[in-house]
Length: 337
Image: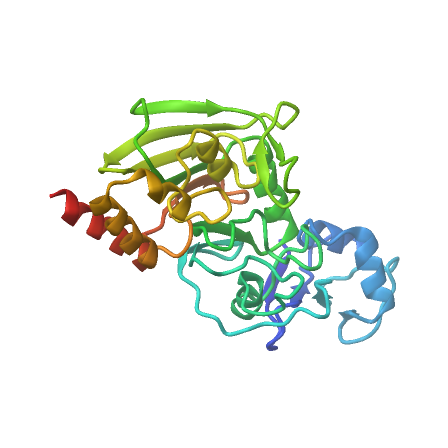
């Protein structure tokens, strides 16, 4: 058996991984690059290994080596691998609410107001900046600007989001998302009462013909399915549990807005002041008070379940509501009592 030990380089950089191997005395002769391709994580290809050898990032007994040389019992091999993140990204010590973590992945309860990854005008304060500080390494399957990011939540949507620590795990999670094998459930507070206590919203979604920054239900859009269940009814609002069967951008917000039940507080899809004119004076005053607390869409990614790409275990996570959501529901329930 090969005595293999994985160690992390003592560095503040989350981009560097160090692997160390000691060749067992009964290991058969094999090319160095072939041996490493077999033993290193699958996201490090044989071509990358050969480049690491040429650049001096792989050493045998502390000396430079060749891809074609044969390994020998007792030799000590060191591999230093740097993930190719964008050089403008940097880590920030931002606290994370981690619901689950192991050596392969982590699930975070993202707070409202946090952007998932850097973009134009948002170079810091993002989830990616926080992940770069917290994790020794992250996947780069989603490009150099989005290390670790497998899927997204909107800035003002709170709740569960999974991040991958290497490309093999990332690919396994992405396959489950694409194959609709991951269960995602949300809580949404919406304007009005639904006609039915449960239902399916099966309407195609695409770019809005009136505003290219928004999405809408359009005839030539992509098939989109949202299932809902009413949990609580209030005078002019309802609390829903929703299950996404597809993962379109803004899917829940677009579907509910199209049904004239926009998510409460949603400034993009008619969920703020436009609905208040339909209320009586008492409820209008209550709505204004609630909107002063809920300054974003009342949408929370509550539950996430998937199969671990490495261990095969079922990972089920649930995220508690954030303070603004809890306060809003408390005020509603007090008024309804």
